[in-house]
Image (cartoon, rainbow, N blue to C red; front, top):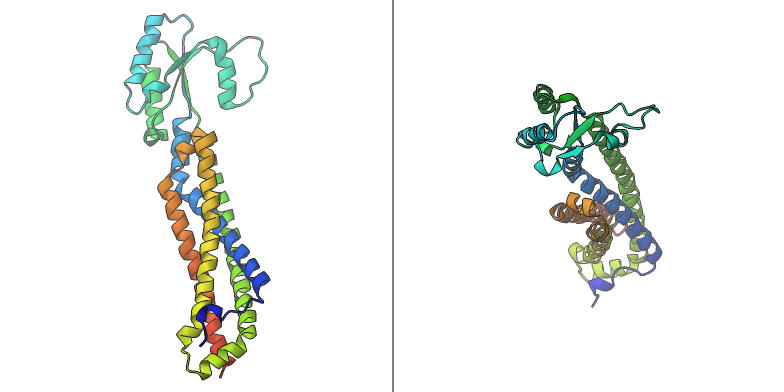
Length: 287
């Protein structure tokens, strides 16, 4: 009596190893792409809420007037109250250089005292910021308003480009994986040809003969997905232990969805390739 679990030959272990490595690389690239793609909104929102808006005020403005302006900003729709900070002009030059790039050398500080604040991500758009700017410039004591918007657009563009680079690499490795899986199964079937013919003679059905090869594909998918889980889980653990900002960015639900998609993709690749080669082999070589 033949055992389906012993049908596959063991002579293909090196090729099986390469097939597993190949599909693992595919899933890791796809996993990174999906993780980055799903978190793009979170990345953008965090960046928006950390971009500073700066209101420049007169040097001679008394503290009561400064507090009045702060209160106005605090009650403005969309402003994050905890982000409001008054910065004296002695620190303004250094701060502005950090926000807008290195400034040319100056003999004396050209800046005034500033009130720095941030707004909620859903309110960060050109129309809303212009409205805040126009409102504040009407207030006594406000002599300038500055904000930066090109950085967000550049980051979004770079994230999109990098995502598609990952997707393109994943596509290349998908083709490579299919080729390796195809050759792995072909070599295995050639090595098992006598066993399979004997099984056919004693009346074994095609589903019984194919079963161990499908099990092989399932095991390979499980191993590859496990590596994806290790990589993505490692990123999450790093965020948990060393990077609070990254932890704020990551969404565990997205990570779970990514792992599930990777597993299903792996099954699709391995089982589809197995089905095609098995059908072809049983039809052409074992008649």
